Length: 527
Image (cartoon, rainbow, N blue to C red; front, side, top):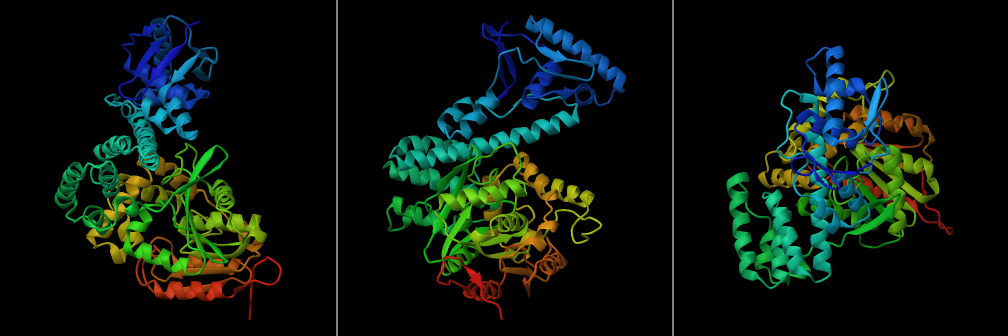
């Protein structure tokens, strides 16, 4: 039996190991790709409806049977394993799929090999206009793979510069700029690499081009860091972004950073999307993190699937994210830690604190909620239907300053803040990738864990929060024995937006009450 190679980057193509196979069946190609991506048994009715959505189910089933026969005729051998209700690629067929090779290379950290497979976007130039569900599936898969490709390129830029191979870094950074010309951080990657390579003229040319794009497309000027990179007195290496390290666990690489020192470790988790390097670009966010560093050693990381961490296919649900917290804390050599869980990251911090109370000095929850969607015992969140409408709206505007009016209304009219948020979204995930992350948020539920919390807990919430109602914060605090609840003025859901002083004052007061006795366990003093 002959094996096959399935190319899905670019226009799809099926090849035997003897050469290309002519398959003039557009829906046949779509079927082969869909089954290969599924990597499992698929319902016949699901496939029939996917490819013939406007046909009666019995008609669609008959068309599917004929299509399977025509595909095997074209390929010259049986390639499907079928029964009355399902089908899949036959396990006896040796099948090589470029997307699977690409993702496997990403997961083992071989980013140069991964990029060699990426010859174009997933199914580029291929469409089934009469199959809306297939088109939607292909769109989200395309965006998720593109996000992993961007991540791989960015890792190569960092690794090549660290190894002194600045010319190679500039080549990868050029590709990043081609893919996202409005990303100022990608532009800085290129400018910095060129400066390190000694090609100042090229760096100046790209700086001028970036300045024009930002002005013409976004109506903003380059950020201070970009200008300092070209005109500052410090050498280029001194202007590099803070060191990002990687913690490895469960076949995943998690990007994290540590800053400062002190007896206390503070882990900050910002919400559903993050990027450990770009968070430092916004002045307000940077100011908040610097203030937190005054309280102890700061640890930040990107959850799996977002930012600079590996973009795996699975969603980072509460249990998985709690495990990732432990992986990062071990890699960082953390001692007992204060967890700061904002918004959607609150549940994972709760889970970790319940599972590992001896490792947690205290828990701070900001603008968080215990359940992703409304239920009879939880009226403080959106209904599933409302959530899905919001999720589609957010995905539809991805790459722009999506949701900033809700998340940070005090910054919604600031052009630079909008440009920063739009760039962070593009760098942190893709529409296809974030779709699964938001699905995990929808399904989050830690209500039963709240009474099990035994660590000192502070719950903070702004009264006018437009993303998570303050009633959710009140309810959360009420379910946690001994929790302190502090209501703050303001409408911003982002902890760094608006007036930070009351928030930081409450955090300082809480942390100052965490005293260290003679033994190494941290405890909270109570009145």
